[in-house]
Amino acid sequence: MVDAAGGVDIQLLGIGNNGHIGFNEPASDFAEKTHLVDLTESTINANARFFANVEEVPKEAYTMGIGTIMQARCVLVLATGEGKSEIVKKSFLGEVTPQVPASILQLHQEVVVVGDEAAFSKILDRI
Image (cartoon, rainbow, N blue to C red; front, side, top):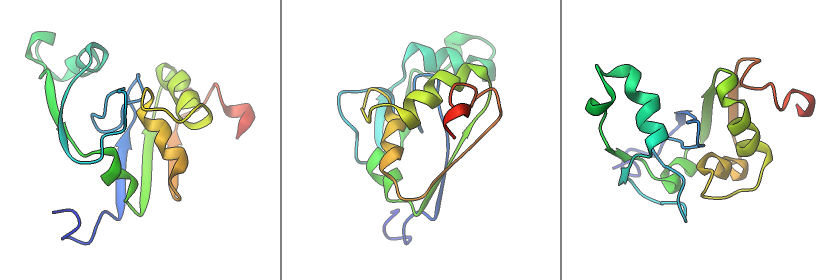
């Protein structure tokens, strides 16, 4: 359906504390297409704020695959807070690995990362 619509012009992503983008959790490989994923405990806990209690948080989600995300013409990533500083560093200055899904964005031609000073605090001397 994405291809039939002409592709994605701008892919807007947040980044999870474990480096997930969309709900592409750390894995042994980069999933190409939209798929069902089991959410990690850290992702479930991070999303608990949207529910009455953690037991109500879904344990699975459908997510656009990394392959589809990488076909977007431009990727815009939002990162805020000191709690994201280590994963921002790993994602954009570390090894490209499916254990840090956002790291694949190092290979994309047009990525813009927007964040506050706290999220960038571990890389400010490198940018």
